Length: 637
Image 1 (cartoon, helix red, strand yellow):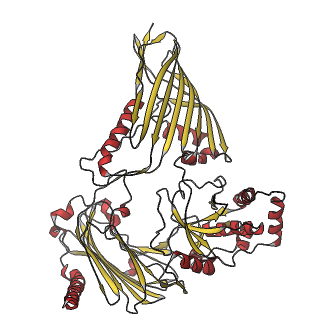
Image 2: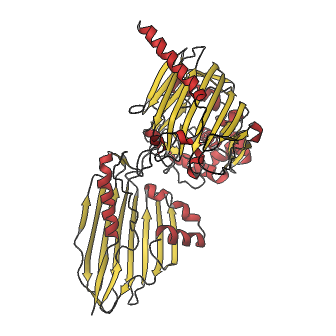
């Protein structure tokens, strides 16, 4: 009886999925519920995706989308496009436009879609292409019905399900169906399903998911990524194919062995002349780490980054001998080239796959599959691993920066995949400013300062080493000290110490009309060089956690010489704020009748905090911004 009830439930669900799009024959936006229109730039009336696994090396994906667009910001949610390459064949592509009353106004077929390369100018060659709909509406709202179908010989990347597609877009119904008639073993990962109206079931060795009547989500700043709090589903086959090559992976170890043998093995041949050059460069060096450094700098000076992704080249690197000859490669090619040169001097190193980006994203511990968007190099070193970003011509040796730091990664070895974590710089991201400031009777000032940066603060600045004088002026005046009007740079000197990861700026500057002067007093802002100006937005009903992306420490010390003819009126008391998010402390002390010293320390502690902490965090930053704007009064003698 129990099984019979389950069968009826599955049949009912299947029937509802198959008939919904037929029932939605009136595309008038006037029929959409008030709840779904609230805060929505667009509404997904229907997103219906079906993935059919025909075989280990054959995949068919069908999609139907019905989207109502309310304004210019909602256009991006139409998503009337399809990627393809030599491995992907588009078999259906249509779009129909309906006006506010549900009247058909335009019909597009495959030949009407724009067909362009799907890569940027930094790519040497690629078979990745994109077809997309270019439609200019005569008025809003309007509705687009988009249908597509494609066949693919690669089953290593089963399309994921993200039923909620972004901020300010609501969802009437989103469905995801996996059809698996051959009963190929697969794994699934469900994230963030709790609290959402999601129905799910299994049928014919496949599965069905649907989400209904999901209101639009408003954007909130200083929080986790959208996909970290909204539902998403991942599917991975235990037996799969990539560009015609079959593989198997039930865990990270097995996946790593397959990837190594399929993509990385026998790609490390180097010419005898290059081997001789590398052996000469490292001659007399006994420390393995120093050998790695010499070879890394050799690669930086010899090569440049260019993307290559035709066919299997999406995962397999160019051979080291080819990179050696032409002097360029993508992340895989340059990493492989560096690995091959290290092998010449007897040092083992390994490809490392990861999600690169300023927002840290981890490889999934519990869900092994081919993923990631970048490759770096890992060199085991007695428990103190060395990590190399082989695409950069400027990165210091062993320094990753915020693009690949502090995240779970997959290291590919001949014995299998190993999960490791890249270094974190949260305890070393320090900026120190020391300055001598001379206030003038006219209200202007002259200042000379020394600014040193470390960790991620180093990473944020070392790129300016190669700026032209004009670019440097724009950087300081428009980005660093944009709150100081009438600022002029008189002299700059920059030193990039790559060995100690220390970036030093020596600057002499002047600011006209800095102080406000009256008949009896002289008023000036004491924090000239490191002022907090941004205050997080206020939310009456915060819904999501607070996230502080990066830890840092700022230490400032200014010696300020007072203008002739003025005395100090009173100095503020010590200001100190201690919170779970960080610490802020300012002291202003009298050195003598002509000088004062200003000391400021501000630190933030990265992490994810409960939504209830957002209000006190905002209060903390607001207090800092207010005190950073503090003005001191001098009295005319």
